[in-house]
Length: 476
Ligand code: NAD
Picture 1: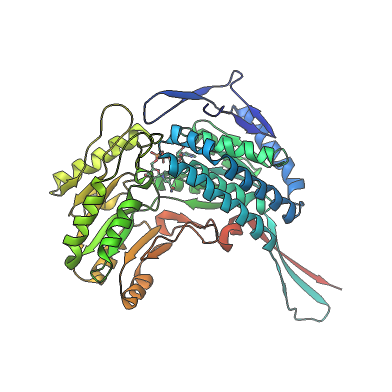
Picture 2: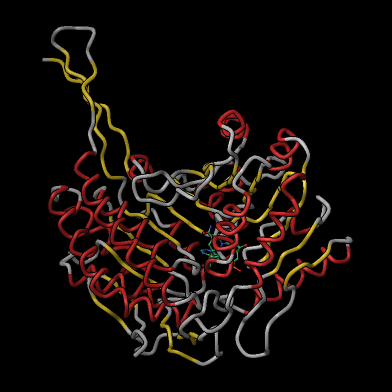
């Protein structure tokens, strides 16, 4: 049975009941899975009032009690990972093992935020006078509005929710209407774990209508968004006009630098597996592959072989290693990238086409030697397309890697610690992974710079966006 889709406001699950609804489809088959109710203005007002009311008491609840609820949600996530994962596969498309893995990893985010919430410390600053005491307090910012996307529907939502509620904030979250089951499941787990009404509220609707209404509300003090750069800029501008704190986790166009002294076959196999995870619909997916000339032939032979070996199919089918894209607009976006690259003289070494006419399947695709002004080298593909280009000198590769306004993740493979250091120091990105993919753990900060966003999720930085600083200075 697919999830019963609902809103979650002030501790109550609300279904259609005369509200506007939208259909939710399986991207592998085009079949209708369910109907998602949109929040009316009255629902949004109710969510705002509930979050404001709940904040007054939630802010005073001890971090131990908040942590206990988060740990319970972690436990429930592990116990229900199979059924939640199955629904994610149905409405988002990724292979079942990836969907279940996403839910399991989120349990770690719950546990980690439960613990780290105990360590939101202030400080005592030595005074200039003997009878003065100076305290720096960190307090929860208040009601947060969060907007999360469809590519990791469980992970993107739980990271914002865990950080907000561990910090003592309350939250209204609008999840992805295309792939909503994960966020409804999260609401059910928090409900079952005993989260007080109003601390978490889940709403759905026309994205820009909901975000504009919530961000403009004086009740909302903080805005957190994960999604595309253009939408992030719009929401950041709107939040700025109301002087609201933001966390923006936006797109990337991650460079990979493979040096000729790396373990080439290992790098090629690892990169092919990572590239086609979630059909490439990952903000940190490797997308621009810079391969040093002497390693080119070996790398390309292994990388194209591994890309051809990806088993495309419905995520629910055993053995599938890459599912459909989440919706039709991603399929046409991929076809446009391929056509543009072809017209500019690039070679399509693997794939390049839609597969079949049912569902949103697109073949794993390797584009060889597109010019730097090809669209695939300029704009984030957010799909199963890799662009590979050769380079001679490391400085040239670092320069080309840094040539775009994105700055989310980056990857490099080298056997030399000297080169690794040059890459660490030279790459402009929020995250640099050398010889492995290590980012994304709850204890590590995840976030981008430049157009890729602002603020970090995870790591000790995770609460920065959810706290305000208050100075108290007292004279006896
Ligand atoms: P999109 O920009 O239309 O939507 C991305 C997400 O933002 C969706 O979940 C959508 O519901 C939401 N959204 C859109 N407009 C909004 C608004 N005004 N207010 C609040 N939420 C809004 O793009 P898309 O076609 O769904 O996805 C493709 C693009 O999105 C990619 O190019 C990629 O850069 C970006 N994306 C990034 C991430 C990420 O993890 N950073 C995740 C998903 C999508």
